Image (cartoon, rainbow, N blue to C red; front, top):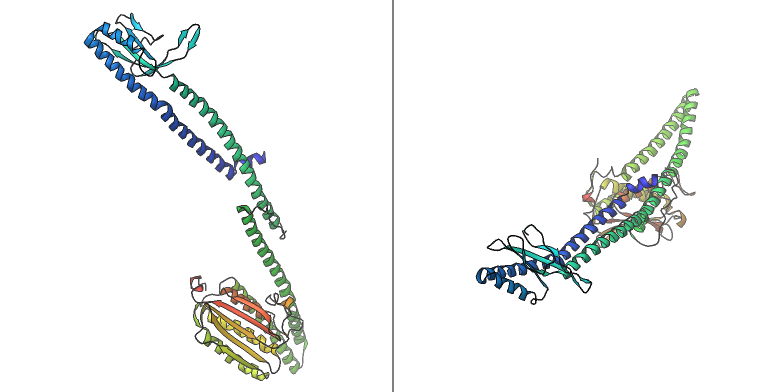
Length: 462
């Protein structure tokens, strides 16, 4: 019962029935056109010829008298391409001359068809007469006609054949609609059931493919890709939640311990030391929350408020100059190879933040005496920024994960683990790409941005 109700509400079934109705209507119209051409129009033509004959015979009666009319009627029986019929009836109802088996008692107003079968030697010969009546001067009735049995047979063939054909076509069309509805319904059910299993928490579920490459397979592939992205996003959120809990637990525990000791400390120097530690842990917590909030705002697109043409050459030179003192303090130097005239459409503050984070990482892991490379070029309307260091590098197995929040290598120096995650979010917001490779030795990070024009169409959200 439930399946029947679903079938009655099926869009594919309704579309199929609409198709059936249109098909049957078009078939009926084609048969109507064929009937007009093959049956009705020939009858009209024949009626026109009989009407002309009736006019000629009426003129003979008027000009030559009744006997001349009778002779013309008898002679007419042997002429013409089709068998001729007639009936000449006096005003008082007496038959003067006739070869029609019967005729209506009432006058015939327009052309009509009469059965005119003839019996010869016990056999019936079928004739169908198209007749027209004329009233003569003395009130006599003149009925003349021609055989249209061939057209009548065609009429019967059209009537019976069209009825059967329409019935068969309707049955086939309805059966095809039901089959199509079931086939499409099964494909839709597969999508629905998969979606419900995913909603129930089984994120690894995927829509089965038929391997036909049809529209449903293409839709299923797209939805499976979407489900894959959703699974990755949920897994990323889970990892972030675990990492947030892990990262916050330690500074909160330290902060709680420092405050607890501060409450019980009596020595002024001890109180100052504990206060400083508590403030440091609070600042660390604040920096983590600020970084997480900023990444969230960037990933949601709510931070793209300052998009404008940016002089990338100047921006990169400023970033190198800003980090030069830190590099020099570690016995390093920043080597810049920045092409002149570089320009992109971006939020300059965010781009500066991304480059600064990468330079800060390069300086932090480059080691004493390292040369930090900062290069920028433009080719085929693509600006490419490359930052390299000569540090220990990042293992290939970990390069995809270093942009995750709080992910840190075992050899990583103290920090929040959010720097590269922030860079990745900024690059994605600007529709750019970020690649991390081996610099042999060290790490090479490449950022690519399209030429101005693409971001200008993006909505600006404060």
